[in-house]
Image (tube, rainbow, N blue to C red; front, top):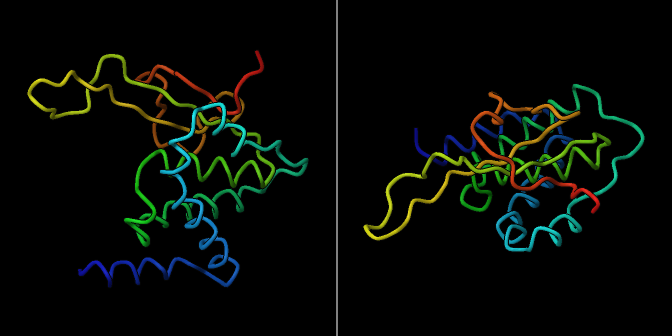
Length: 159
């Protein structure tokens, strides 16, 4: 199936005008992720972390947001890049604003490498970021903790 047709078919997942509007906001934030990831971690934390509202979103609202975040790279790639950084930061941004007290954790695989490298390059460790809720992985297919040593967590813990 041609890429354009695939993208158009993917848009059929938008169920109503509210989905379409939220999807545009998700894509807008997703486009900004590469620029946000250039910020030092403390500045990134200050920009994207917000104290959750007192009302928590329903399971249906969380599912809807996760569905639209997963749809964004399928439709808007290369503007919205696929991968855990885009997914993690975007979900963190929107879920905290919806009232869910999630954390975003970053980790590296201390024993792995990311694949083929230049002949003289040293191995680069594989990395991942994931959401947690009450200390447990949230919206992850597999628990990343056995494979990735945590290096950072948003919101940053007070020193």
